[in-house]
Amino acid sequence: MRIKQSGKNIKYSTISYVIKLSLQFIVRLFFIRTLPIEYLGINGLFTNLLAMLSLAELGVGSAIVYSLYKPLAEKDTETVKALMRLFQKTYSGIGIFIIIAGICVLPWLDWFIKGNAVTDIHWFYVIFLLNTGVSYFYSYKRNLLIADQKQYINSIYQSGGQIVLAVLQIIALLVYPSYWLYIVLILLVTICENFAVAKKADQVYPFLQDKEVKKLDSDIKNTIVKNVKAMIAHKIGGMAVFSTSNLILSKFVGLAAVGLYSNYYLVISAVNSFAGQFFASVTASIGNLIVLETVEKKVKIFKVIEFIVAWQAMIVSCGFYVFFNQLIELWLGKRFLFEEPIVNWLIINFFLMYMRKAVLAFRDASGLYWNDRYKPLAESVINLIASVYLTIHYGVIGVIWGGIISTLLTCFWVEPYVLFRNSIEIKLKDYFKDYFKYAAVTLLTSVVSKWLYTKLFTEVTIINFVLGVVLCLVVTNAVWVLVFRKREEMVYLRNIARDKFGMKFL
Image (cartoon, rainbow, N blue to C red; front, side, top):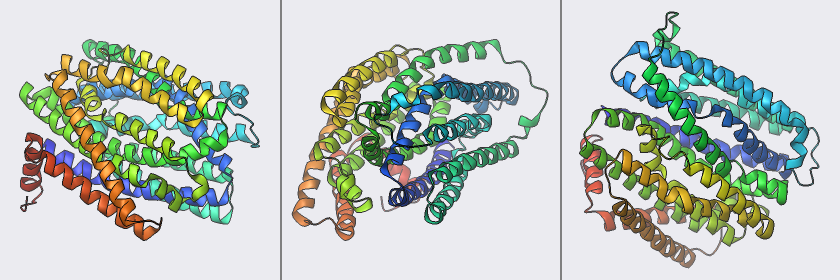
């Protein structure tokens, strides 16, 4: 059942990802053709700034979703109702708090921007702020669908919202190229999509409309409170690492640099968005696994998920190494390119971040927020100090170095250590033995793929790019299958593909 639900969720998530990615690229192309690059920088700056305000969420969502796994598995409707009532009250309060706190930031907005020449920037910020705040008023019901292994429903509504938004934005940019209209459309579609998902959740779970809701069990409430306390640190760490790069670049380099950086980050975040969809599709199943299965089964599935993550990281990192600048040039033009060293460090940072996904998925499903609560605090301090210092002295590449340094000194070893000590019985040295083996195959395959590409193709054209992507996919997958064909994880995946999805040729 878990495999069936995960497969269904992954299928719809993949379709949603492809639609979202394609539309984001198309909209960005129209955006840079009709509006100044400084407006692109505003997008990146406000996204990071409001992510800091979203720290007010304090990890309540993750803590409650974890608490939903057991009652959903046991079909304990009364507990689910009590948890969702808590979700509703908490998220409504958070949304109101974010809007009020965001308004208080208005007087200091110009401090974050070096040489600001954009008029109406304060009003633009207010619209971004409302978009962030109002999303909490209905989105809590989305989490119930995800926790109940119904991520595919969420994917369908997200895809619909993205299609509507993209079409409206493109029409707006062509007919009346106004940044005002561009961001107002984002706000309107966010409200409509969240409302539609909430109504769908009410249909799937009619008991959400019940007025009679029992008091939440004290043990569950204590677990949530404990996890929220731990998630405060995780939220601070995540904010410091993922939501400050554009702020630092805006402050010390300028909005134009944020605009260039945001183009590369859009591509990277598109990949991470797909990964997010994939893991949102399987995390609920992992939570069900943690609750019901044996130690041996947990270890086996973790190794399979880690193997899949490494495979994905290898394919994408290799593709980035060979094609990243070619993609930006074909998409936006040469004036939007970064130097190759900056791009290479972006790829290294991406690989380190992506390789954490299996550990984080099992950590979240195991509810181990408390166990590594000090790690994100150390990570955030190291990242901020290193990123600010290195950006001041080395420019854009400094903010990337800061992220890499903080990851290697904290997340790289602390997260697997905590997971293997408290949930999954795996030796840390065995984990890193596999990790470095995967990394070595990725590095060698990337170098070989780029050598082949440069020998076969000398000009940057759409045809050469497409042929190069095909070449890269063939080389990376062939190498991976050849090197790891006898591993237990590969045999497991082959059997799943053959028996569950009808791929008899395997």
